[in-house]
Picture 1 (tube, rainbow, N blue to C red):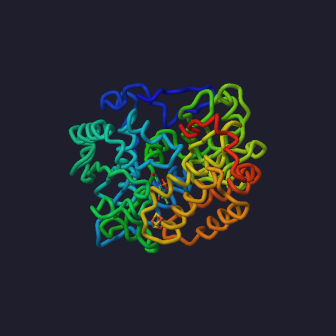
Picture 2: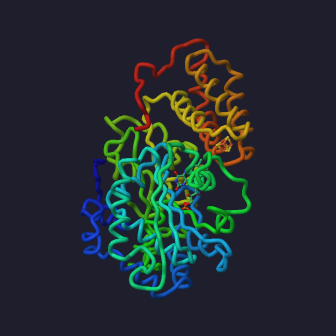
Length: 435
Ligand SMILES: Cc1cc2nc3c(=O)[nH]c(=O)nc-3n(C[C@H](O)[C@H](O)[C@H](O)COP(=O)(O)O)c2cc1C
Ligand code: SF4
């Protein structure tokens, strides 16, 4: 059972029911559950989408696309059935929040899925769980069965004429199927490779029907928006970034864990106050602010608000909210190697710049870390990664290239220290930097 953490600066909205037994439907109802879905049902699609737009909620899966706007793109009339798809694939290294939601508050995901379905006129929602999260299936499936038994799901939800069904599905364990179009392929029983866009899922998605696909945290936030009101939710966050976010603090930090903080919360404060500072009183060397695909930040770059716009301005991305803290005894070349090894392993192999590029980078960095690199290799690693950018079929290629470019640009001196057959200067401190 993952440890629950807490800090006075937290604003507990999505996590408000964590640790309170809300996976049991009676407890969820006692805590105000399913009132938001009833409210949404009574008020209709226009009200739902408007409230979502007012809330300023931006997708928590990585790209930060405004959720209300995404829902409004779905055509009102469609010859094919429409679908809601909950992305619970959560595979980006450093990201560890969605599984807590499924564990502690699965009904929030179900309720959010119902509201999304009402907004776009879908009769079916799928909850897609990461393959490695098999231990969560029983919890989520029980929650779905309980919601059916109470009449909250099925042909006549909450005694109305409206139908909404929910189906739980798992992947087989592949990072790439977190990408929305690969996820749809996987759900349809095919190999998990992405589709060409456009058309976008809102128009042509699952089984060719209009589909809204959202991250599990995004969906679990929805019922709270309807209970507290879109404007109140927006007011918690920063400009153009409504509400809170579940930040996963990991790496060389005193108090790792998932903390729910307002959007725009200062990154330095998050590390030194919420997370208790660098483990063992060491010095901070770098921070990966939003999951392994986001470019690294230096200690003098972390006095920023953690929202999509401010982190973007600082040259990185808020991504999936996985903050990985790196101390001064970590070898950045090894960190870069571990990162690219993940992407090389997870590349689906569909397009050449990603399939070959990640493998070349892994080989170059392996050689480099072992002390057999040359000065020219440093430029080659950067050149190779830069040439992958924007030239791949899906953003996994960029996700692999971006952090590599950042490591080389910001830590060139450390790369140079590995030259000339010398042993890695950090060899005696080798340990996992990513927890
Ligand atoms: C390689 C790759 C992996 C992804 N993995 C995930 C994931 O595990 N979970 C997720 O919600 N989004 C993931 N995404 C983003 C999704 O494609 C999509 O943007 C997201 O589910 C939309 O939901 P949101 O608008 O609520 O953020 C991934 C994207 C890429 C390119
Ligand atoms: S970028 Fe990588 S993961 Fe995406 S389609 Fe190409 S090979 Fe597959």
